[in-house]
Image (cartoon, rainbow, N blue to C red; front, side):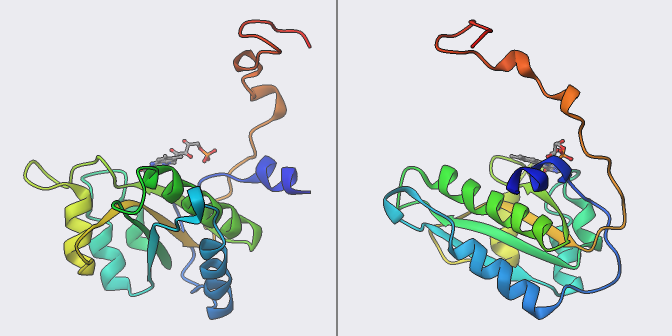
Length: 178
Ligand SMILES: Cc1cc2nc3c(=O)[nH]c(=O)nc-3n(C[C@H](O)[C@H](O)[C@H](O)COP(=O)(O)O)c2cc1C
């Protein structure tokens, strides 16, 4: 069941040397392109990166929070055409989430790297840094990068007892019983 995937999934930031097979990359591409979007606007575009040199440069997108891309074997840079819809953030986030969960389903570890609204340094946004590196066309914004690879760390699933049931109300806000 899908819930089992959600129960075991954790963010993975350490990766084995083993590359990700081409068939798995193709599957991830298909998953990304099957992401649902508002009015089927499909504002996203993806840059699939496997080149270690480029991964190393992407790792420097932010002073921290992106450094583990250095050792990733694969990354999907999730971009969106912001002129296509005012809901580009939501649409790009759905695609990123689908990539994340598909990676888990095929035995890969992955982690979200936030790019939108983050700084590269005091002069440049992380988005502008990545856009320059990848030679993105005008009008595309970088939302996130999903780093991937075979996991080199084993993270325990979060137990059911750790779920924040206090965040759930029934019928009206604050009502705690069904
Ligand atoms: C919108 C979003 C942005 C995130 N940005 C980063 C990031 O820039 N760097 C990072 O290491 N992890 C990032 N994460 C991963 C979270 O830190 C992680 O999902 C959270 O701590 C829960 O841990 P888990 O995924 O292992 O359950 C991000 C996750 C989300 C959903």
